[in-house]
Image 1 (cartoon, rainbow, N blue to C red):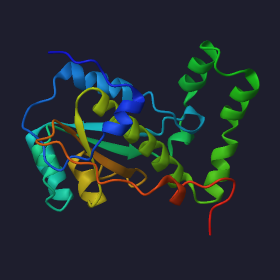
Image 2: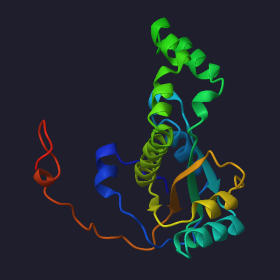
Image 3: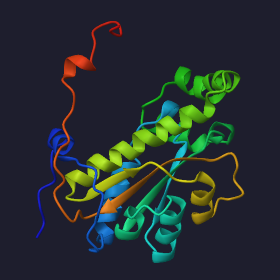
Image 4: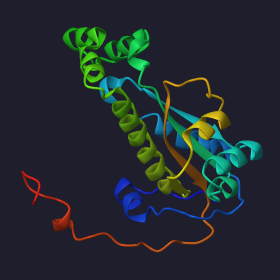
Length: 213
């Protein structure tokens, strides 16, 4: 039976990190919808310097579990999404990005010229921040995935604790030293309804104008 997707605020309140998953597969059309929403995530200068590798095979998920020091999520979840950040994306042609933005009347000539100059990315390179920038963009996309998954009735688990070299090996990019693994997100159906662990009062973590000392 189809369910009405949750609103963004409702998904934010309902989202939980799932530790264990049911073996129920995710329907291909539902996974397609989730990925369509994921790629709508913003990135600096719309560079889209992050990719998602969708791992559903048993062999692939076993390899990711091994890369994650035996964590069970990749073994139990029917889908694991690996977010790959590419700090070198700005060096590619990327003419299609500007052409589409201009065609959609999203960019004017001045903004397009700034994009084509790559001045901000040269600055990031000088400051050693290209990798950080790409990983941040990948993490934004991962957040979109987790909220969209909740909205669509799916559960998710962002994963820490994995060997980047083994993750790269599992998804076939062992020879790509320039790429970074940002995060793994397991997706499926939770085997339980995890309780909310709670959050600190907002006034402990949200400040006006300046960081509280």
